Image 1 (spheres, rainbow, N blue to C red):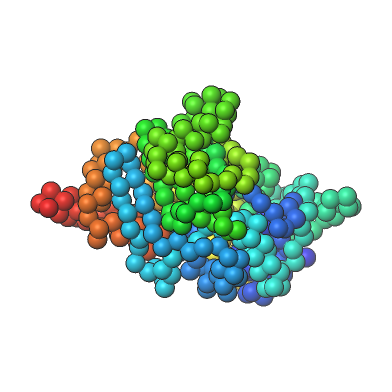
Image 2 (cartoon, rainbow, N blue to C red):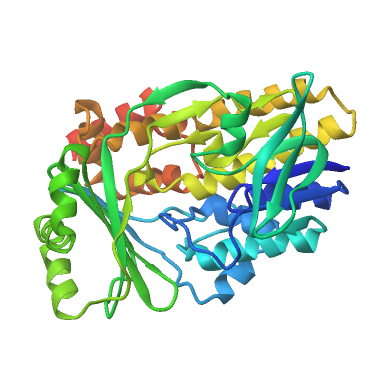
Length: 402
């Protein structure tokens, strides 16, 4: 009998399993993958996410993989360019974008080191539900015999197509339609060591360094262009680079060497699902998902895995009723993620509202306020704080009088 079973061992599952195990709970973490294992991802971890890794004792391992630090960011919208970086956030003055083969393995091993039992190459076939309460799982390691494992709570950390969410009938209560699709790949031979997110007319390109002297290059277009785009991915990919950052496109062609295939991301709608019930909870993309344009997914997974672990601990120890603790988890997650969710849904249309356009224009000519913008992106300031009416009024007024 386990205290908790966690289904899914990546950016949300391994941390919640690790944190519960560190608090003395008996934890089983299962995943269909065998690690190291890759997965579709933006790779990017903001300062707040790195602070989590540091506090968990895992950041040095990530840095040791050789992933280069990022200390400067450029965000643009047509002719508006916002350039700079946030002041240190929780003592973190750079960001990183590690390959998931590296990051997820470190997280899995962190869960193991904490005392959690981790079963890789394991598929959950069924949730055990008795009198409306989830009490365990049935599943097997590939080629092995199906076994039954029971726990006081089963946590689904198994992504957007969550088996656990489907099995319990978790309802979606917030949904904003997806606007775009992404293709990305990796190049060697490029000089870019900074973070770029550049938006043009109905399209975007992202550029940032990752492990093994590779640069991740991603392009985004509106969904209606998907059928034509996939008919000639490479030329369409380069066309977006030429349209938005022609100097980079030239380097891509003359010096770059593509080292991998093109990875498509035709992701689901932005949503929030009911994330708890009798004997179960959801975390990570299983619970809450948004467009990858702002790259908040990994850091959010860390933050809300930590929050869920705190609330589950309260329920397991009898400090408060489990259902009450889990309801607080969902409420607090929704409150803390609201500004990031709204900003992501707005900017991922690749068309700024008049108000946001005015803000971007002002930021492009105001270095100090640009630092605040990057602080919001990095997690040192909430969206509510950054977009507070008095702050925006000062920004727009300072720009008008300059």
